[in-house]
Length: 254
Image (cartoon, helix red, strand yellow):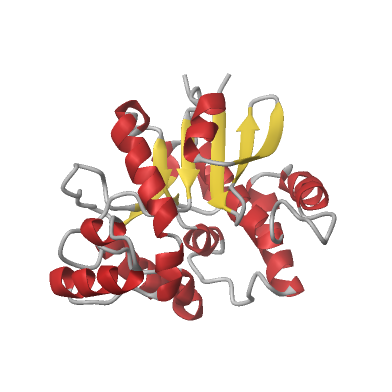
């Protein structure tokens, strides 16, 4: 039985949507190691976090993602260089990043550095996961599903949520039920939610439907990605086509 997973960091843990041939599930995992403990049999896992880390420049995939997203480009952060990811405070990390790559680290990017390091260390410990754990970016995926046009409305608005739900349902009809049940389960009660908002659920869900596609129905930013010093690809995977075209190119997994 094939299994495809989309994962997004959701404040208290990694929120994951699991799609299988006979249904779906969702869960909150405290770490990537916890996710792997229960789902190391997954065919593909798409995660919203940088994987290949640069050493002396901005990653081309981040630069291209910003260019594609227009007004939504603020959702993409330039990935710090590997040495900066392993620094202990922001001031030292910024100084090192500027010296090695010529750009500073955005405060928002620094907030996800522990997650970048977590996934980097996980892949170092479990090299067998390299061919199943892929970096994606939710807004790039929505851009692709929206006819290669950025979704104009923010996920913080009702119109933005509705448009992304429409795109997800067109790709995977059960997405409406997944979204409704996950919001009810993980964002309530309001005084103690496990997931901070619907945006985290949307992000994990679009990563999951991307993972569900055949890799032949994927595209990457950039088209010909390079690798980092540990031979990890520096790329962002996303759907290559809208649903109507995809149907003729999807191939079932063995």
